[in-house]
Length: 574
Image (cartoon, rainbow, N blue to C red):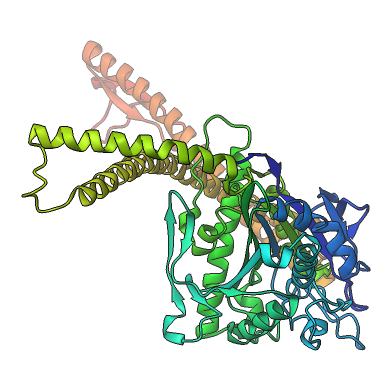
């Protein structure tokens, strides 16, 4: 049926020229490398490698030749799908020429900032390109130029154009004449993949037709002024050119060229958006964050046996780009960055996104609708299948499984229901398998969340300890390296210390006096106890009376005398 190949997504980076007042934060060191200069947050320079890097002086023609190249001739006209996607933050293009009002952002690079003026002002479909024409006008010009070079190319090659925008996670048809029918629905089928129902298709035959439709659609596309961009796109735009090449002798092939102009990522603090513009910015960032998650997951799955589920369904944008990211397409991403130091974080984020996208491998398939050999094989197989069908119907009639004359449905309706039943069973089995994978992914996510919460608690505790240590260290630094006190403050501190020292000395002497008194009193008490005991023993044995000598309180003396030696006053007789 089709030839399957494998190729990585091609990534190119374009740096806009800096203004005289801006300080550069990135620099192109070669045709495939960018160096992000070091800052206070990053001590070392960061090096990023891509397929192609365009410096500030690169022209539109050089960008197209270095990115798209021979994609139209070698891929589209051979039956392979192609996607060209521009990515970057809002306002990544700045005015660099007062004469030409030249910009180098996403819209300028893609050529959607005003259309191809050369083709619109010309009545001929093969008008020469203008120097400011972007990737889209040049790709469309080459598409029809290659068609004109083929034998009977105008009759054999049919080109259809569709153009839609993703606004607030809803899809709108930018080529619809009636506003009521502009809202579309996106479905994912097994045979056709991503399908947009009831989208308007226009047959186009020249660059003029395409750019005129582009101009009409751009007028309908939602824009709003912000602090970052005077005409900021509030939606993602996807243009598709479906190419069908009729057979000259053998086969019929088809291909589609998808041209994507993403709305720029933005921060509400920087844009200062309010009301509906603020809500639109939130939806834009949601789609772009999901796009980044899809790219990260696809990059992670490369070369791994256990793969993660790619969250295509989390956003309408990623669902539309399913074939372009890891699917059936040759994809090219052009990342537009600003070299200004004020946009350093956005620039690094864009370069990291582009680096992850470069690791993704797509599997483009050659889309062959039919060939002469297939037609001959089908002609031979058709009679055999018809005969088998008649035999089966006759067997069913004889067995009574189907009463054709009395049945409520015909055999054809029965076969259709039977085939539809098979399809529904297959869809059910795939849904069950997908549900099982989602449950496993949820369990893994819950485990990851629990681990992250535990790590967060640990980090918070460490942060608290660090803050306390910093407070202590600040106090120490204030003491050690703080300003020297004045002479008056030194005298005041000296007096305070002297007064404190005297108080301590007084308390110390008082305590020492109390200690000495208690020591002497205890010693005297013990001495009196012994003398009293001895006197009582003598009184009991010798019938004597005790006599107290008038001594000091701390050195009493107890004596005894016989009863006949003591007078009535208690004095010893001479």
